[in-house]
Image (cartoon, rainbow, N blue to C red):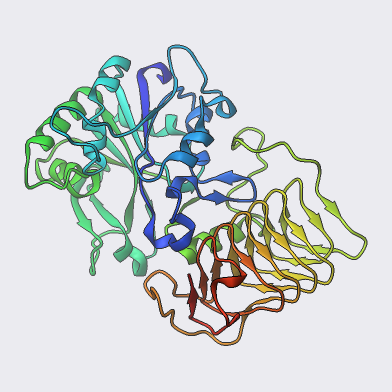
Length: 419
């Protein structure tokens, strides 16, 4: 079955709800879990499922993502007659360049799909964290003689308003679709993972492209039309771990879920490994004054302070007397002596001066974008340089490339931002 299916990974989204973490890179390229990037999970699921024909559709600021994927070697996707292909928007006679939506992204790559000549097409989002054997879903799809199948999972009733909800009959055939309903008729939430018969999907994409009223999106147009037309669309119930890390809080929370005593997502399962492209670094070093409890620490780190319930990516340096708790520290961050960091996300290659305190005081609404920054978590952008003895409150944002001269006042009250 594996040879008859091609995966199309939608990886062009900006992920605006992640704030400064996606100012300069696409959401699927955001680091996650100590050494990975978000897209690693979809790619790893493909190869673990035996799927070696993979198209990755990129759009928003794709340079970091393209460099990360390369020719696909870390995932064993550097293959002749298959492997990974990065598919970007292109300009042709009419002048069009950007994809209009997720369905349009596939429509604009019909040539690629026709060339691979699959029997089935697996459509994935490249910005979710999970481990799934897609062959289980394909087996279900074939057994139902379906034209399309949608992976779903049961969510608490009070969270159904956040999802597209599928209402099914006794055979798991989808009979109604509710988009983020206030009064849900079901708790089956769509995960944005679809399997289509290629001949059916090809015609659906062509018809959707002709519809000027369509937004050319799978969740908003293709799937609802299938339900309306009473086509053979079935719900595959997934019972494993799945997270949408689309907000600052969910990103922070999902990372810290990895340090639970029995994490729901097992990064250490030899039979279902997650692969990535990372720089080769020496082993982590812990000084004689260091203390580390309930944390993940990647290679290349040098720790002389105290860590508690935190995740440190590769090459992080922590000075003497520094205390880090409930925080995510990304690759290459340098933290001076006597620093206190609590409930924070610090992006790559930033420097935190000695004596600085981050995450102090009481919560306050963010002055810049309360829809994005709305929790206790303070976010420090990429390549920032924070001076010694700075004080940064809760729910603050320090934008990328900020340096010591960006402001005269480094006593940053909760909810404030610095550009």
